[in-house]
Length: 503
Image 1: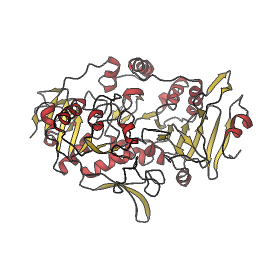
Image 2 (image 1 turned 90 degrees about the vertical axis):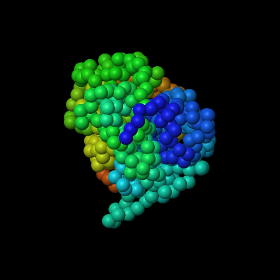
Image 3 (image 1 turned 60 degrees about the vertical axis):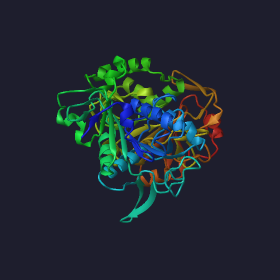
Image 4 (image 1 turned 120 degrees about the vertical axis):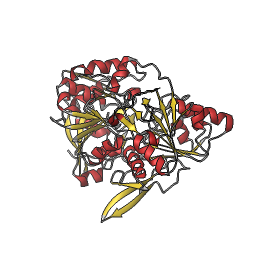
């Protein structure tokens, strides 16, 4: 039977050595007060300690002094297993300093491994991750020198087929944020951007005889409609009521509490941009890439668009009228609306449906998307892509590996080089005003996020759209299939590549 208690009381349920699973998505829907209560307790008692933290998509709030950052920095955590570290500003730096074990697994594979544990299974099989960095035959999931646990990802063969087997430590504590708890302890997510892995996490914790702690905005007398109660009260141990932070109207719109017709998506997106600390870029190079990439969209396509330069695809799809003829999706579970970027990434404007994250990755893993648009840090002569690890920086693979593993058409959107690149376009003619100092096309990528060899074997169509040309993946490597007006093939492309390409 659940109890209503303060955050400080609830955190006493956590013991040294526990494995905590957090339901959040990059920077949204974090149970902030629970994390900060844990930090207060750790400062006083040096306990709970030796914790393992698991999150499909990470659990930061874009602030190195809030949420879990403090207790991670001061040593409460021995091991982190996350799909993405982007919003964990302090933690992702400490990872590269070998302060604790840290592992990066594809977001959807963590989500599916949590669901497997909820069903009493030790792990989940997947073809996602084969031949990229997480494959133990390549690098494995460890990020730093301390991270040598080889039990998390194993290469296996079943009925003559190859898979990766993802196995998580037994989860003993759930930290969840919901909207309301009714008098029976049922938890609804009505005012949330998503529900993520919430139910699977709770079921896994109960299978392991652990404790479920839920932060909510309010208690209600009237029970929620059964379909809206994502977590049944019988799975909940502690409910902590925390007055919600006041939300700007733009963010309230993302909860689906009122309808936003397609014609208003653009206006609402601008409102969200205005209140977000992370502003959207509008470079000439980005516009050139977005406009060309958007031409790959077809009526009735089911689509995923990544963050960064790929976001320009949606802008130009809106201009050319295609946005209303396709279905956009986002990893957190939203489908049929318009994904937002910046601090609220994971939320959707005007979503038609928001379901559990594991179900979204079922769609991605089975090839249910028609096309995706992804960013890239590096591309090599074979066409392999590194999208998760830059020099001295690390954000993580996120949903990238799941999204690109089986989607029939994969479009990488990237500049030819970076750091100082200046480009202009007038009347359709592209001029490279100044080249960047850091090349994006390299002899060999530092780490593989996308395997060209496997894409060829899968029969996927793969394009690399830049601000000056378009390459296509072939069994021999990259083929130059398009050069924009104003671009000199020899000077602006071939002379700047460290390898030869087909023409």
